[in-house]
View 1 (cartoon, rainbow, N blue to C red):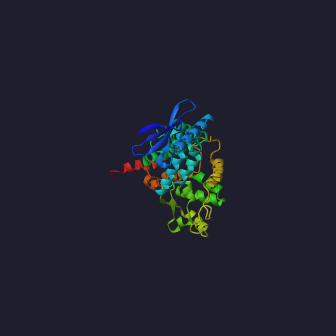
View 2 (cartoon, rainbow, N blue to C red):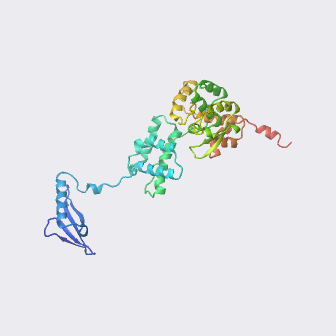
View 3 (cartoon, helix red, strand yellow):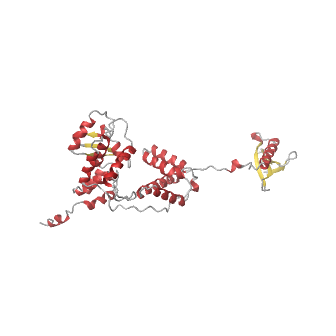
Length: 365
């Protein structure tokens, strides 16, 4: 390519291309005095010497007013964390693995501080600061670890599936220590105390009874519809929104009598808790039941005393703990809890009655 200075216009150059075309370029000095060369375009695309000269005049005029004439070219496309989250949740929905709880967790805990940030500017320090902010909001260590794990999964998805060139800033961030050595559960007397307290509140009564009978999580109980109830087998189909799929829970004959009357007038798709076609909001249960649990069981306990405070999830632990105390085999408890890994269930094994000595005494008789 040969470059020829225009005889007609100052600062304009004609560049002869190998294919016979001509491109026009200009030179000018930026506000620091540095000489800048800029390609305006090709003759085949309608560019002329006069157009190139006018472009140069426009650039010089912008520089006089303190404006960078090529500012638009210097702005690179920014990929934000929100962009990666959109990709992650859309792909999960396409794979039928969508989890509205995860999306809600992202919007509530991650998006406000990191969502609009350039993914390339997010650092390990940003992640640890997020941890600190969540701790200040009294979130449990296990919950905080889950939030950071979700953030890491969102970023890793684009790295692995979308060929994003990036080192995940979550790498190397230490998980917060969690203490699962003791899980608070209700004694049989405390169960009676709670059920007696909420017996006149139809919504809370059926929620608590189903939670204690099946061990299902909050959303699992709230999603039970009339069509999920099988009175002839004392069973209920439970949706596991955490791991996906469904599993079977059971209830006793005493509750069966109450349940039969309760669902008699309901339509197939009506929800058992609340008794209507609209699902009861989890925040409604949390707001009303928390006050009762605090009053009955949490007096004098610090709000950060996660080991000893009774919360809604304690109902699930009560179910598993009372099964273990009753001597139910650990594998049966695993199935009733719908645990993916028996290691999750083994925490309850210590509550099982010690029957080993009797087994050994009669082993060789």
